[in-house]
Image 1 (tube, rainbow, N blue to C red):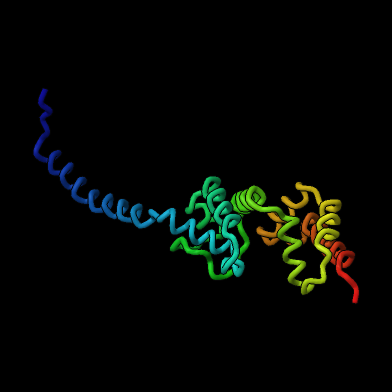
Image 2 (tube, rainbow, N blue to C red):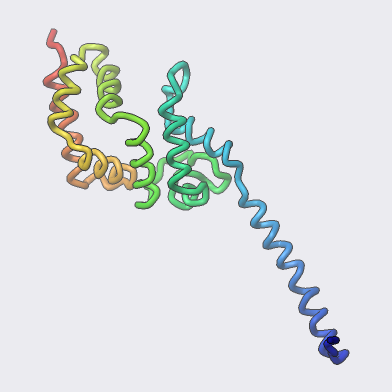
Length: 184
């Protein structure tokens, strides 16, 4: 069956199509500009997570973290949530993350690394090797549960340093460090 259109109606349809198609093409161009290289974002997250430890250290925790985080949130969510800038590179300035991204970050971090072990390594550096690592780990294990670590990490990423979990974690680390450093 053939659909008949009056010449005036056909002109209107052609005019609408002619004015709309460039706009649609522009939208398509914008959508293409938003396509980001997942491997590039992953590499950026590995470097961001590893920080200064990347040189010479085992990158497995950082790689695990990046993979786990990208399974939980998209690069666009990382951009909108405060981790990446508009070019999908890590933000140069520190910023508070939004709750969903902070929670995803915390879950990925806890899935891929041991908080007590990382805290112990940091304290060993801060105390210039005077820390009794075993005593520190035992102390932290006795003072902190997984829920407190999770809440403190999420709150810290959201720049909510007044959260009670952040205070509890900070006090535990300080006290355990004092109790575990060899006296001279």
